Image (cartoon, rainbow, N blue to C red; front, side, top):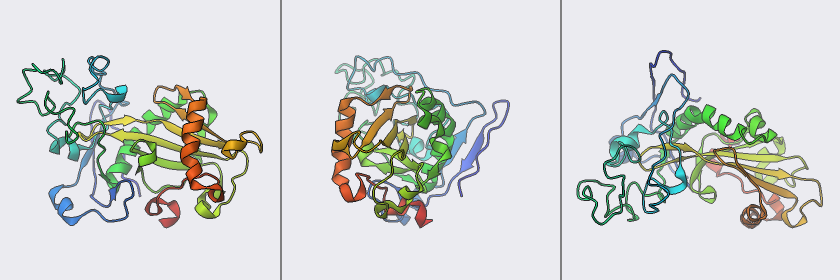
Amino acid sequence: MRPFRSRLLSGTSLALVLGTASIVGEGMHGDFPARAAAANPPAVLTAGANPPRFVAQNPCAARNPCNPCAAGGARFSAECVVPRLVGANPCGANPCGANPCDANPCAAKNPCAAANPCGASKPCNPRNPCGAATSPKLTVAEARAVYDCMEGTMRAAYGKSGIAAARTYRLWRRFSTSPYKSESHGMRFVQNYSNANSYGKFEGGGNMPAGTIAAKDSFTVTMAGRVSVGPLFLMEKKAVGTHPGRRDWQYTMIMPNGAVRKTGGIQKFCNDCHSAAGAADDYLMFLPDPFRATNR
């Protein structure tokens, strides 16, 4: 059962108290370690009364590629966070906001470098807790609550594309029990939907019929607990012979601003990855066993 979620009026906020169940991560098949559970009390996800607001993009992002908060120009939700990470991360309180070191966190003469954990000596360090290449592990409860909190924002973002599937995919059956981290989708947390029930047979489904669409929506979480919308990934089976080199699949990415990407480069990149699944699985790369809806 998903955590209860509601919105209150007049600026009042609602705290959703979450348990610490299993860790959601790439290739995860184990349970949340007891020592970690003891160290991390139940997280609280705060949902405000109004639709999610966004923190303004860092003004240094364009000219400072070393800025750990700049990668991708992500628009972080001001409402949906993972407080366990915010509290534990020295950069979590305000990694991209009114930081006096924001002017140039990689500058050699940065006066805040000594005191600022995101300062000159650290943003390019792989161990930097603010590093853009790092993605945290979440409990199942945290991942589900973030998804619930971001649901309306994601729906609105993808709806800007004008593509029908972007507006209707949430009416289809969901084949994942929880968001899970997908290495092949940029370490984002994703959920699986399809308009074809045969998708739920997974490796036993055989060739999907024309008209089948598999959809993965996504969100990102920084090591500081900040959350942003990721792309919506669509994989649509066209009529036989339409794309013979791709088993007739067409790939589309819908970006958080509604932009649609389906150029030849996208087709090649996605197909090169999906073809590794083989013809027996019709180039479909199914989700990990622990997150399959049939395993409820």
